[in-house]
Image (cartoon, rainbow, N blue to C red):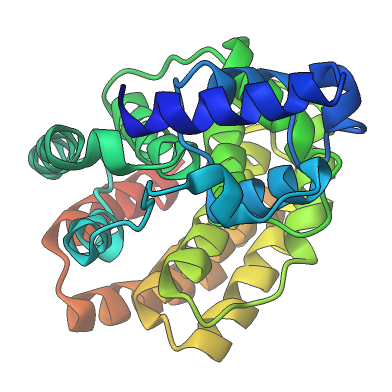
Length: 300
């Protein structure tokens, strides 16, 4: 029997021995949902250490009582490959998207049985975000994702996966004439998230804010867009992630073009974005930027 099934079986036996239903065990579902517990007990997913500590405490056990001889440590080589997924943005470039999808396939091949559900969810979300750039369609009605989104809407402190899920949700909102109320809930909560020492997290924070800003740009809610962009600039300044600075300048230029009807000021901002992008040297972004400038500053 594999590691996931052994751990899941142990958790289910201990829960049932105490006469607890899954609903009773999960309580308000802020730490663990019934569906997540079911997947863990069925051996379909490996719990993270945080969830494992919650499960053990609820059962009145030590984590080691549940694990036995099963080690759930993740190899360092996995995190090296994961870093490559976050290292640079694809900006819709087919070659970059293909390279990242290939890397995800390699990770699944080498590490699938070793990864807890949260890491598998990270990979799944990244894959869905990449696929969306190729063909914009998705299904937040998916039970697992609906389950996670319901948790995100009531949480106060977000994980990297929460931010990726919000990014995926906000992408789907970009096709709406009027963004749903839940997008505003997400924005309010993301604005309150503190910067962390972990680079992945800060990149995820910027990505969530950028995608939310894109949704509000698409719906012409320019003031809400600017609120997200202002927070992005704060994060960029504090984390020195200057590679994202041209992105915020693009949003600000569009604010002047479409909201304030001031193309002269917009051109000044676009010129600054172009200079910064040239220093960074990302040719894909420069190509996309030139297209946006041509569209936004075209003579009426």
